[in-house]
Amino acid sequence: MFTEIFDHIHPIIVHFPIALILVAFCYDAVAAVKKRILHPARGLWMWLLAAAGAWIAIATGPDDDARGITSFIEPHETLATLTAWAVSMLVVWRLLMYWKGKRAFVKVPLVLYMVVAVASCGLVLGTGYYGGKMVYTDGVGVSANGTAVNPPVQENHK
Image (cartoon, rainbow, N blue to C red; front, side, top):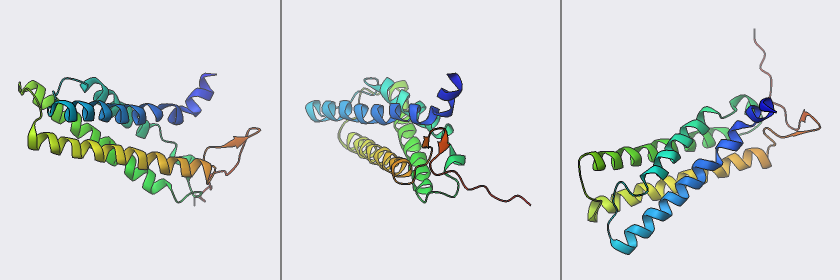
């Protein structure tokens, strides 16, 4: 049972940062629109978990399963890395504001923060799109009756 879970850990993990990034953004957007202010400590835990989850998702990505069978791996990996960095940047920014005793993001900092948060949402959705293309279009990681539907290309080692 544990072997099967670890063999499929990436698709299990990836859904958490996707959901957390989108929910954290919605939480921030409601606060920003409603009060025209965003307190750095409120909702910070969602962004912390999203950043950690994004980096764990990257670390668990099964590169070998996609070798030679999909053209979607490069945009997927690039967008995933950009997502993790953007979300991490938001977390660091919020932590710095919190530790420095700043009360909140307002006006220009709030707008800049929300632009990066929107970009994070776009990046994570793009990452998911290309991940889905790899699975549903190219069959990466898909097996039927214990046999890979589209097995990785084995490179000749000389």
